[in-house]
Structure formats: structure tokens, C-alpha cells
Image (cartoon, rainbow, N blue to C red; front, side, top):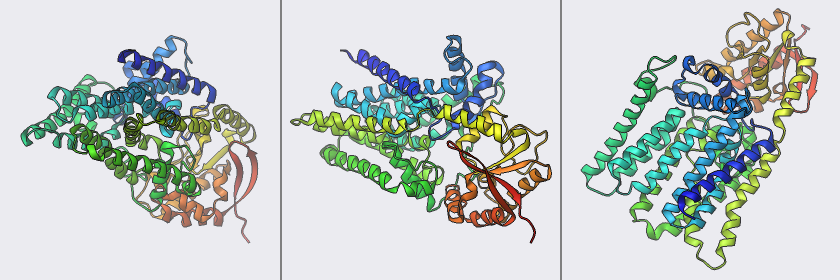
Amino acid sequence: MRLPAQLLLAFLLSLLTLAGLIGWLQNVHIVTGNGMYKSIQAEPWIADFAHARLDPSNYLYFPLYGASSRLLDAFGILRGVAWKQFAYLNAFWASLGVVVVYAFAHRVTGRATVAVLASLFHLGTGFFLLLATINEDIMPGYVLVLAAMALAGVWFERPTYKQVVIVAVLFTLGWLVEWRLIFPTLPALGLALLLSQGTLKQRVARAIVLVVTIVATAGIVQQIWEGHAGAVGLPDLLWTGKGVASGWAGLGWDKLWMMLSGVGNYLLLVGGFTDPLSAERAVGPLAVSVLLQLVVFVLCAVLLWPRRNEPIVRAIAVVFLGTLGAGQVMNIYSQPQDPQMQINVMPWLTVAWALIVAALITKPRALPILAVLSILPLAWNVKALADYRGGDRDALNALAAIEKTLPPEKTVFIYWGFEPITMWQYAMWSRTWDLDEGSWEPPPRFKWIALDAGAIRHPQWTAEQDAQSIKRGIELALDRGYRVVIDEAWSWSEAEFAKQLGGLSAAARAPAIHRMLHGDYEATPVLTEKTVGTYYELRRKSAH
């Protein structure tokens, strides 16, 4: 079978597998509900493409997925349910990503068997499989950047200017889908060119061409959208500042737990996804997953050490390990536990596995062992995802139970801020964010207070300012006669609060917030729902 036919088969089999998995799981919000918010943000692009508003940090994402959803609507595929459509669109792009891996492995090793096993391995890695079956927004940008990295790996030993331009264009289109993708890979691409073969003048010229092409491509895209609602100039496109000067930015020891979660779950989904406390509780399985990755790294390094001076080996190492290094430095400062923050910096693992397979496959009886090891992550992670089956149905049932017992017109909800049920209340009740130094005018159906809002939006606040801001919201709700309920965050100890806030570099605020809640208010259980947990009704403490 010729290579084009192999690539087509890899795409089709991947798409059928992922689409079948989505249909079987019936939960496109595993681990994160961000995709629901993005599908809501894309609704104007689906309804009225010409007048929808651009988002500088996702400049091409909403036009791309908006147009894609319109196409699915035209064919009657999940018409009007963008939050489900986006999962299948991600499966489409993920299947293209498998094709990229197959083509790269085939080109580097010259063996179809190696390409098959590398593709199976990549398909099965935890975060890739997860993001290929839910509606998160990273997949198209990731695949375009992965394609640029793969081409750079095979071309940048001694690239032509044409090859540099192709890589730069693909890379730019990728980060224009998701802006932050520019940071981990750009330094690696530039370094690979500076270390490529040729004179110093030639190498510097290649790096200049890379940068000029990136800026020019971004400029062309900017000109195409000139005059459209939300269009920005080229400087604002190159630097959107997404996530900067917010609670996500910052360093602290708790970020190490979150890094363990992000790196560990990238290979094997074992839990501890969302915060330092959950990662600490899952330390054993996470450590095992990281150790397995370390074994792959060391084994690959040992097997390739005799080839260390080959230009293509050096180019591949610089591109993929350079992206890993730069990406994890960025991640430790922001959200190292987040699947979409890890997926684009961790493809080195698949590359290393492909090179290990290529080096060992000719050994006696090696093929069956390598085949089993290549498919083990897929088997493990499908089993892990199975635990989340039916999550969307269960959440909608929980929403109905909450609405019956705690009518939203009469209730104000207090949440930590990341609970999945808040996404459903936001999407199905009213598209309103939590109260943040404001008031409910006019009162929406979904009225809520997020305990993490101050840490995210006001990193300059003191602990007492944060606590008093939350208290003002509670008092406003009580004064207006609303029933105020809080979820299981009420049962957290001060130490648990600190661990939760540690992920936002705000652990020091925990004592003040915990003291305010439990010092000024008392609570009694009013509803227990198996999917959400227990709600407690909050009242002012009686004077003694």
C-alpha cells in the first residue's frame, strides 16, 4: 500500500474510533467544561458569520468552528447542539494529528510498522485521547503546530527557504487558533535553525526568514479580517496578553503538584486533574506515569546516543525537547495541570517512542512486545474515560433536581468556581457570570458567587479584601430576600481552602475567607444530589 493510502487509512480508522468513543461515552465535558463556554461564544459565528465578533486570543478558532458547525447543521448532524458538534470536530482534527504522527514516523524511520505503532501510541496518550473526545478548544491549533514541528524535525537539518516558510505558515495558523501556542515552540524552531548545517550567515538568515514569515502571515490574516467586528491590529494580534496579570500567573510550591498532575496524566489518566490537593492525593499513580515517561526518555537517549551527531537527530531533539523545556517553564507559571497546556509541549514522548520502536523492532520477538506496549496507553485510557460515561445526562438530571428544590429565581448559589454544574447552570439558565463587585440588576435566573473570583481577577487584593468582597455579595443576597446556598466548599477545612487557592497562587487568602464564612454564617444541609453533592443553606449567625 502506498503512503497516501496509508495516511488516508490512518485518518479514517482514527476518526471512526474517536467518533465511536464520543458516542459511547456520552460526555463531552470530561475533566473540563471550557468547551461549553467556547461553544456558546461561537454561537454568533454559527448564526451570523458576517457580524460575529473576533477574539484576539482565538482569532481563527471561532470562525473555523463556527463555519464547521454551520456545515454540520446543513447536513443535519446534531443541528443546533454546538457543544456536542465541537467534540466531533475535535475528533476530525485529532485524526489529522494521527496522520501527522504516522507521516513523521514513516519519514524518519522508513518503516510502516513503526508508523503504525507510533500512531497507536499517540492516539492512546491520556490528554490527546481526552481532548480528542471532548469539546475543549485546543485541538485544531495543536494539530497545525504539531505539523509544523514534525516538518521542522525532518527539514531543519539543512532547510531551504521554502521549507522554512512552510513551517512558519503552518505554525502561525496554529497559534492564531490559540494564541499561547506561539510561546513553547517558537524558541525551539529558532534554535533548530541556528544549529542547522551551513555557515553562520546562512543559519541566521534562515532564522530571520522564519520570524519574518510568521509576522507576515499574521499580518495577512489581520488584513483579511480588517473591519470585521473585534478585529485588532498586528501588534495586538502578536501579543494579546491572555492570562497575564491574572490569578493564573504566578509561582508557588503548589504549582509543583499541578505540574505532576499535568505531566502524569498526559500519558495515563489517573486522576488529580484540577487542583494541588487532588494531585497530592493521587501522587502514587501520577508518579508511576511520570516514571514511565522518564524510562522512555532515558531509553531513547541511550539508543540514539551513537547517532547524536546526525543532523536530523539533532534537529528532532531541538524541536521537540526545546518545545518541552520552554513549554514547561511557561506552564509552571500558569496552569501546568491543564490538558490543553500540556498537549502541545509533550509530543516528544511519541517521537521518543517511535525512535525506540525503530531501534528495537528488528530484535528477535520484539515486535509483539512493542505492539502491546504501544497499545497499552489506549487500553488504559479508554478504561479511565469509561468511568465518566453518561456524564452529560447525569448533569442535566442533576440540574433538574436542583431547579425543583432550589428555584433559581429565589436562590443565590455560592460555589468554589470550577464545579462542573456551574457550566450547566450558566448554559441552561442564564448566561451570567458570578457576582464580582457588582449587583444583580436586573436579576438573572442564575445568580452566583464564586469564591475563587478574587484570586483570579484581582491578584492585587489582600486576603481581607477578598474575604470582604465575598461577604458583600452574600449580604446583598440576604438583604434582598434570596435563599443563599453553598455547595461542598462549605465543608472544606482551612487547609483544604489553602490547597485549592494554591493553584491560583493565592493560598495566603484561605484563612481570611474561611474565617469569614464560618465566623459570620451558619449552614444546614438542604439538598444532596449524587452528581453534585450537598448544598447547605447559609444564614447569618444568631447573636448570643
